Amino acid sequence: MDEVLVADDLRKSYGDTEALSGVSLSVAEGEVFGLIGPNGAGKTTLVRALTGTTTVESGMATILGGDPTAVNRQRLGLLPQDFTPAGRLTARELVAYYAGLYDDARSPDAVLDEVGLADAADTWYENLSGGQQRRACIALTLVNDPDVLFLDEPTTGIDPAGRRSLWSLVESLADSGTTVFLTSHSMAEVERLADRVGLLNEGQLVTVGRPDELVAEYGGESRLVVRTAGDADLDLESVTLAPALRTETTEDGVTVYGVGPREIGDAVAAFDEAGVVYESLVWKQPGLEEVYLSLTGEQFEAARPAAAAAIGGHQ
Ligand SMILES: Nc1ncnc2c1ncn2[C@@H]1O[C@H](COP(=O)(O)OP(=O)(O)OP(=O)(O)O)[C@@H](O)[C@H]1O
Image (tube, protein in one colour):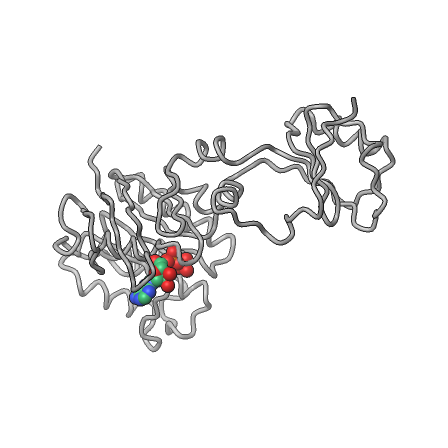
């Protein structure tokens, strides 16, 4: 399969800030590549290098086999994170305006229909809801039927049903051969859409792989989260868990690591038999979010353990 995007040891600094510290990757035709990473990791800079809108100090980028600054712009679609088109044009006028910039553009109404905006086609952009505005922006990137589509946080502000329909749209675009470079902070979005994921942290590509590969390698164990808020006297010694399980006490309960799908019943029974009063029990399988947290070293406040205890069950 042809490589549509290639980054080879890209380096770029802004003053003392090294935004890209030797990034190499390639994306094949029809692939959806998901780029994740913390704020300031260098994601936008990488997209800009790949689309020829910023220069790099060293390394090489190619898009559709050529230099990004020389690429035929008719073949690209780019949805930036922040993009505000003219407010006093209707959705249809906006799409028609952008269609006029290309030699060969799609029908504005067909594109509006595709992003779920057919009913709001005659509404001024400024009067569309936030989610509708984002859909209109996506429509603008599709009007030239691009071969390569860069989407930066495409579904921010879009309601859950709309998000799912846009995910289906991205999937069908990829099925028809469009290469998609997706930047997102939504792990659910990336897990659903991306064939491969790259995690960028402090200008370096920390890992690249299929979502399931990354989850298997870095996601950690499945776990049972027991919330016992108010039960300050939780006595783990009295909970007879299988020896292989590991527990960690948190501010509002306990997390039991290593609980597979078939062990959930026994683990819950162990808490019941010990008379533990719990508010909720949640079984979690690791996903891309756990990969992200483990590789970036970030933690959600709520997930921070108050104290850790490895009891390994009761022997
Ligand atoms: N034009 C610029 N001038 C100075 N510094 C910049 C410029 N653009 C980016 N940077 C810096 O380079 C680093 C990488 O920024 P970049 O925008 O690529 O990160 P990002 O991963 O896209 O972040 P976010 O998730 O917040 O959008 C940051 O430290 C940022 O402050």
